[in-house]
Length: 249
Ligand SMILES: Nc1ncnc2c1ncn2[C@@H]1O[C@H](COP(=O)(O)OP(=O)(O)OP(=O)(O)O)[C@@H](O)[C@H]1O
Ligand SMILES: [Mg+2]
Image 1 (cartoon, helix red, strand yellow):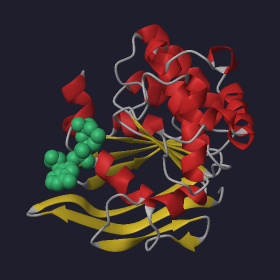
Image 2: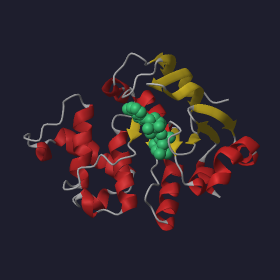
Image 3: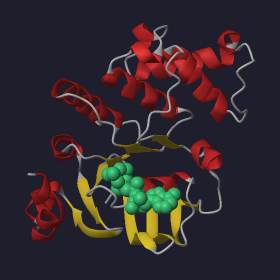
């Protein structure tokens, strides 16, 4: 079995009386896409936030590359190579693709966003930013404002921003959201290649994408993992069908 890059053990998180993470144990292994699916409000995004560091679990542990990262903040986790994209786009629409990536690189280098700084002339930012745009195939779109990119191109731009410093794992929250069938297909193909870069924990409602990409699927239902396994097992799991898949058919 491949090594676990990311391992959650017995995570619990409540918002008031609402338990949104209920004893969650799961891992992400080298080379894989592990999909996390479940109905709206199941707690998927919250779990991603707990891993990334924006939300503190009440109990349980998170290990990343063999290290307990529970006490680290979001920036420190990102620096270790935990790359994430957001369910709600974090792009600055009026800025060029290149500038968006440069700001992400700058943020990851430790300094905060400073809009007054002549960021466009900073070669230490341009070079890595261009390299990331090339990795996602957007090098020809570098000067285009983010607002004018297609949906799929924006997703790729977000992933370029998430790439930052040598990602060891990707956390992607609904990258297919709002895309048409053609766009989803193209992004699915892109993510299939991205797993070579680093394994992907993929939260996604698009079941075509999930079943095309995932090596393993975990199903979250009211904060609990009710099933976890290879796609063919998940597809025929009666509890999963009742809780989730059937409802969407
Ligand atoms: N900061 C918060 N304070 C209080 N409740 C919250 C907070 N964040 C999320 N919740 C609640 O926790 C539950 C899980 O939300 P979450 O966003 O994690 O679900 P999700 O599985 O990502 O849903 P979706 O598929 O719609 O994106 C929801 O009932 C939500 O209203
Ligand atoms: Mg969500």
